[in-house]
Image 1 (spheres, rainbow over the protein chains, first blue to last red):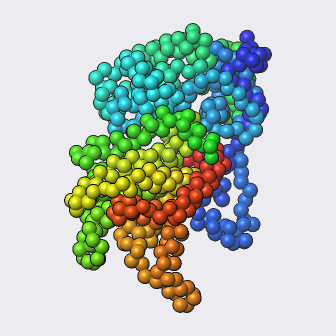
Image 2 (image 1 turned 45 degrees about the vertical axis):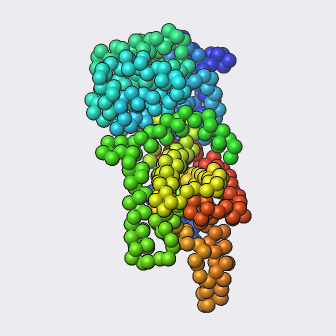
Image 3 (image 1 turned 90 degrees about the vertical axis):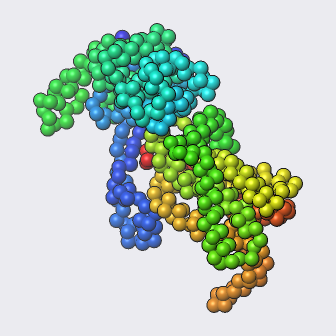
Length: 272
Length: 272
């Protein structure tokens, strides 16, 4: 099943058309941009000639992707291939240099669990603030608090400052808040592998709930098993381009082949 | 500019939550807690009273009261501007993980300091009562003066927050400029006591009146601080012309700041 390219745009939750994103490399000029160096550069003609043109890195090149509503998409690829940049473009944190982006529905982005948690505040207070940061209204956050506390299962610690939490407790609470925002589109960067086995099952159950409710899920993960068992489609990104997309088994097979070829010839950069 | 304010209104829940967090984080885990709100300016005032009131023996009656009426609004301004510099560059945790209008961050700084300022106002009344000084009807000017001050502070804070992302030196520059500005603003001294200003070598010769006007028109904070003092200390209506000019200037600064912000906001997530 190739649900990506053939999907009707009217039914799409996310449409990416020719998205390009480039970053300025920290060249010599950028290396230490202070007001002083900038002034010196402006004042002396000689220096200006030495300034090299800013080097650019292409993080994403011509990404075309249609994600239909209710579809679970797994994005795979090596480190530094552009997966996270893609998520940041979709969530609006980065703006693409070229291309068009259309998003239909309320997006909740779990790029990092516990964004905006304050260590000195109690779990309960952080639920409220984090919920609002993730896009809930004050009332929604208040109403969802008991549910979140129940899901996080951290007991009496809920009224202790977050700084005394174990890292597992912290992540559980953060995950509980994030998944209770109740978005139409959930965008997640490597979060299903949070916590112990028990919690991992629980969070998978939560994700299944999302799927059952026909929500759109976009997932970046290195766990190929998750993509294979759990996603409708997979997208493999390599060097800022979509190398393959479609049926998860098929895409994962191609990806594994590519990695194998690369391991055999590490010196050459094997093209997909 | 309107779009900027509109977005602030749209995200008012977040603005409210962050402000609340800043306010309660400020004195959290300190034994005296909320008392510090009053202790900080009081101790600050005592230092100046000892130096300029007792040691230098100035002729201003009720000098502690005179000082406090200007010191509190000045503290609101200077604390906002200095903290505003790093409002964006220090919030990497939020800006690179969640999508929201970045002007929330400098606005939070200003509102936090405004609330803190309003909370310290009873100190002015209390000290006035010690001198059997009862507020007159002139306090009806308070909302007007406060609005002009917030407008000016907000505009400057936007500009500094946006520029510090790229030019980190600004924090140091601003810290120094603000402490210099403290002395050319009539906080410690009385504006009506300035003497004529002559620099023969440059051919500058100003009467006392002209010097006063120069101070007021060059530095809008001088006008605002004087207005606070007019209302609380002198019990007279602040002169409206300089205040109108300060208001106009604040509006221009804010308009420019909103435009600068709009143009630069794309780079925030990438540069911090």
